[in-house]
Length: 266
Image (cartoon, rainbow, N blue to C red; front, side, top):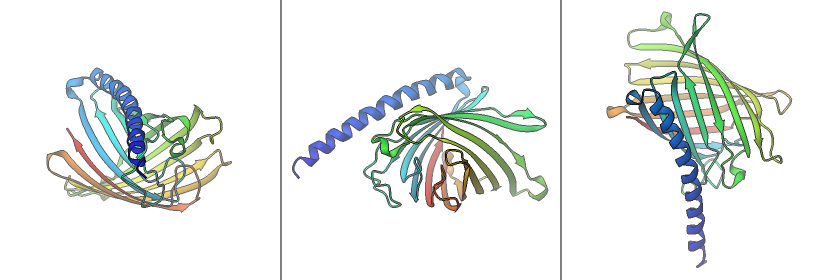
C-alpha cells in the first residue's frame, strides 16, 4: 500500500506530459488558423462538458471533455478542439476523479454557402487515436465529413419564440491505426428542432439515426432533448438528456446519457 502513492503520481505525470504534448501541438495549429482568419475579429468559446453514459459503444463512455472553439470571420467559420478525458471506470456513475486521456478531435466548419437556394455549411473532423490506455478509445485515425443546413420555421414562430429545423449528415471512416481494432465506417444523421425564446433560452429536440456499414448496414438511433440558458457575461449553461431508440451496439449510440455543459464566449 505504501507504494501506491508514488506509482500513482508517476502515472499521472506521464499522462500529463502526453496530454500537454498533444494539446500544445493542436492548440498551436488552432491559434495559427484562427489568426490567419482576420485574427482581430476572432471570438473564442471554452466549454467544460460532463457526460454520464451507460451501455456505451467505443468512444461514447462516461467522460469529461474540454472544448475550445475559435469563431473566425474568414471562410473557415469555426475551428474546434476537443480534449476528452474518459473515466477509468466506464459505468454510468464513472470515476470522475480518475480520468484518462481519450481520442482527441479537431473540427473545422466552413461558412454557410448557397446550394440550390439553401444555406449549407460543410465541416470535417479528424480523430486521433490518443487514448491512454487505448481501450478507452477506438485505436483508429478517423476522418469525418459532413454537411448541415438551417431552415427557420417562420410560419409557426412568434416575436418571442423562434423555431428552426436543422438537418445534418455525417460520414465517418477510419483511415489508419491499430490493425487489431475494429474498423469504423458509419453514416449518421441529425434531425434537430430548436426553439429559442427571449434570445436567452433554448430547447432542442434531436433524433440521431445511424447506419453502421461495418455491421452490414445495421441501423440504430438515439433521441436527445437539450435545454440551455444564456447567463450574464457570455456564460452559458446547458443540460442534455438522451436515450436509445433502437439498435443497441450500433456505432456512436448509447443506452442513456446525461450531459451538463458550462461554457463562456470571450
